[in-house]
Length: 162
Image (cartoon, rainbow, N blue to C red; front, side, top):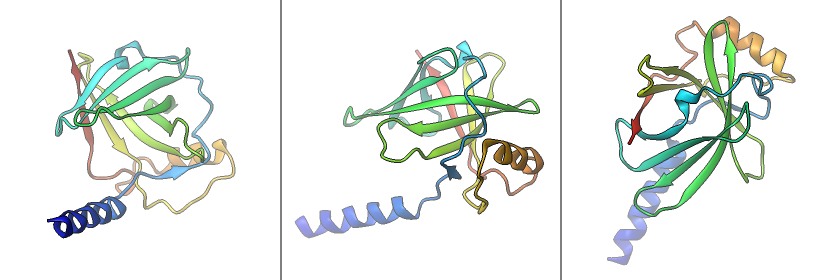
């Protein structure tokens, strides 16, 4: 039985390692300068899974605190995020709090008009470019965000949780 659990644990670890992650960088799209959207505050749950509950709160006028709580273990991982606007398209810059590196991940976000659903589209990990400044990254995003390769095919949809 112990051997079975060890093999299962190795399989799960391998799956996590091979799972695609969104594009990451130590550079952000720009500084946190877009005011908090009050409609994003609250508790959110993935439409496709009930494994986690996300609580989004206001850290300051421009920064969100996002607490990801496991519904099975109760473990909480905290992230900070802020919005960037590129020609009317909103991106969330997200970094894990307490991480030894300042690695940011980027998601296009679309909030439904009712405010009850938000869609996160990860920027693809297939981008190889490294950027020395936020200005370079923002220009690259602006130039390429309309191309089919720019976002992962899998969107994450979250529903407001009562």
